[in-house]
Figure 1 (cartoon, rainbow, N blue to C red):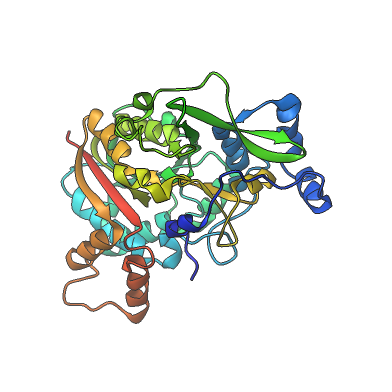
Figure 2 (cartoon, one colour):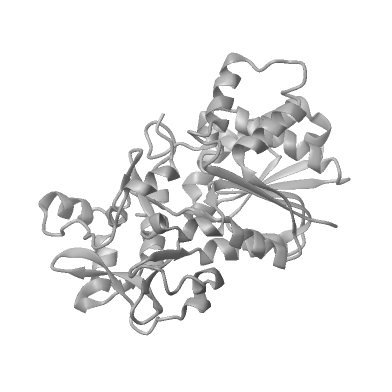
Length: 390
């Protein structure tokens, strides 16, 4: 099984790479059907488009973006996620949620962002209905989904839970302090657009990166007037300024951090939870990470991020969980758990309605191995849980 494996980043190098040639006929034909007409005019005259703008268009353009055209998860897509393995992941999260929501009386809500085809919602709601009927009776499930086509897919998947599920387009549609329950996501934070910065060792400055068109090729370019001192971008990096190699790349996950901050504001009482592949601060400053963690995925293989101009490549980065956690702490949350998915799920197996004296079925056992194996999803994927007290 080919998973969306962040370990593959070590084999993907992008210094000095050029994008696909625009004068290649096959590429021209693809571009004509995709984002070329939108992006190319903005690059004429040696103009530079900030990377985060390019990434936002490539992934989220309402008609041509990667997430707007067809399902992307599974054997026929470009990557697998934990929910692709089967219902066990959702069932274990549902049991975890049931234990937490038992501390809140009255109506409660579970809010999911990045629901894709609705698999996690379906698995969790089925489990609550069958194993936790009292909770199911007082629970509402809110899905944040801006794309109408995805809403239709999710509604079809969740039709047996009609009346339980409500759709909103954006997190901002929810009032501050209105959620009593859980806001959770699976592989959401890695999908936000990021800023790309590279270190100029001679000038001792970070330069923001963008995309430009040169000799009919896409290439990286520094954006004039964006130079920043090391301490302005990362106090941790400031201590490494003398030893960072020239061209060292970092990605600033500004949008993901802002989303977490906004989510914290929506909670009146309850938990924020994210399952994603990510690391702590020191991971990002190792010499072997000098190319950053930005990468493309197509048909379960790592590829050149510039191929995303045709709307057929996923773009992703490793989540900087230290910064996400600090954002929550600044918003009044306390961290209840941060660590590998393997440990979180194994603890849940022991404590949940699926554990105890009843052994897992063969299918569940195989799924658990995939979800917890250090070589697959167990260690690369992390889970962060933060709590706000009423």
